[in-house]
Image 1: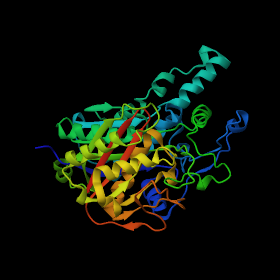
Image 2 (image 1 turned 180 degrees about the vertical axis):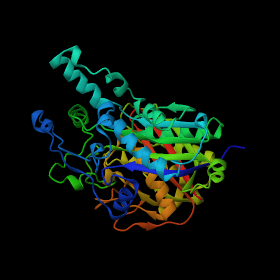
Image 3 (image 1 turned 60 degrees about the horizontal axis):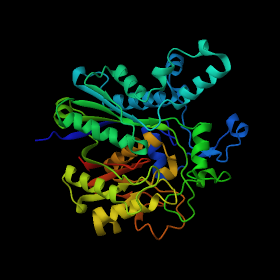
Length: 412
C-alpha cells in the first residue's frame, strides 16, 4: 500500500510578504504586491512594461553577505523559504536519517541574473573578471543543490524545469520519492528571480505582460474582461513533505495530506494553451485517480489564472470538464492577482496558499475582478474570503511548452 504523504512545514518569500504568515494574511485581505519598477535599466532600455511584483522583503535583508555573494537571487529566495519551512516543521532539533532526506526544488528559468551579469562582465572587463562560481550559481539545479547542502539531504536532490508548472512538478516528484520508500522527508518547492531587462523585454515583445504601467496594483486581473497580460513576480515557496508514519513518530504538526498529483503535456503549442483544455483536463482527472477522490470531495481551487487574455479561459473549461457541475459552487481563488506570476516558483507558493486555505478553512481573494469574462464559468472568490469545509483542494499550474501539473491536498 502506498505511503500517505503529509505536509508538516511551510515557508515562503513573496511579493506580498517575507514569510508565510505575512503572505497569507495579505492574501486574505487582498494586497497587491505589484509596483512600478525604479531600476535604471527601465529607462536605459526603454522597456515598454515598467511594473513587476518584487519580493516584499529583499533577500539581502535576511541572508549574510557571503550567502548573497555565492548564490544567484533565485537561490537566495529558495534558501529563505526553505529555512522557514524547516523551522516550521520542527526539524531543527530532530535527529533524522540524512540518507532518507531528499530535495525536490524547481525553477522555470534558473540563474538568469548570474548568467547575464557574467556575460556583461566578460564583454566589459575580460575573462579574468568572471567569477569562478559563475557556473555553479547559474545552473538550474543550484537551488536544490544549495538546499541539499543546507540540510544534509542525501537521498536525492531533484530539479524539475517545466516553465510555470515546475513548482507543482516538484511536489509530484517529492511525493513519488516518499511513496516509493526512497525518502522519509523531502524539502519541496520552487523559486524564481527573473525580473531582468531581457526577460521583461522578451515577454513584452510576446504581448504576454500587462501594460498598465500607470496602475500597477490593478494590473494583474485574472478572469476580468479588461485583463491584458500577466505581471512578473519573484520569490519562492517551500513545503516539507513527510510520510505520515515518520511525521507521527516524531509528533509533528500536520497541516494537510498531499493526496495526489497529475502531470500531462498538451503537445499543442510552445506558448499557447490548448483552447479546449484537453491536457489540463487529463491532469485534473489523473489527480482525482491518484488522490482517490471524486468531484463531490472538492471544496477549493487555487487556479493558475495568470491574467492573460488567452490563458484564463481554457483552465475554466478544463475544471468543468473534470469536475462537472460542482464547479458552480466551488470557490476558486486566483492569487496571482496579488503576487504576480512567479514562473517556476508559482506552483510552490500557490501550494502553500492551498494548504493554508484547507487548514484555516478560508479561500483567499482574487483582486481586480470587476467584470468577469462570461467565458469563465467559475465561482471566483472576491471581496471577502470564503469559508471552506473539510475536503480536497487543488492547485493548478500550466506552463510554456504545454506542461500541465496539478496537486491535490486533503484536509487532515
